[in-house]
Image 1 (cartoon, rainbow, N blue to C red):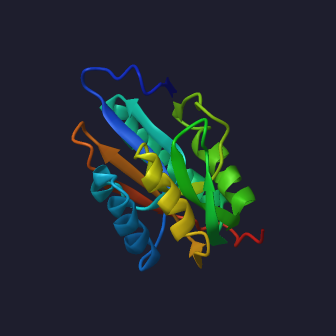
Image 2: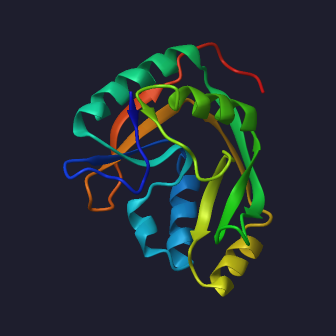
Length: 187
């Protein structure tokens, strides 16, 4: 088991993240909007619901995490996610997001299963599934994002968990997709 925090990366480390990808056309649409709100780094961040936030690990841990996700995938089935409306973590954190209106409990179960494997870390805040729209941008952009997507709604079946890796360049690359092959979940 590796215990990591975002502030103690080793010299030869990779940064991993695990998420539920948001399928197109919604993923591409929300990513374009996020870039438009002034978050240029969003061009390298696929639209997602986080299960394991960015975490530095030793390179050999990446394979162990991929194996753990394969086990998680056999125990969890696909489930419906409904994204609807906006929310914010302000004033605690300058984040505006699209809310997960259906599928919250399944996201929570997956998050706990993912973090029970070889990569364990303390979270800075209690887990709250969401899709980030704007993060650490000027207040006017945060308020615009909150207003612009207040009536946004889409639904899809979450049927995969994705392992992302970046090696210091900030570009999140898909390392592995794990199909959720267990019995279909009904939230």
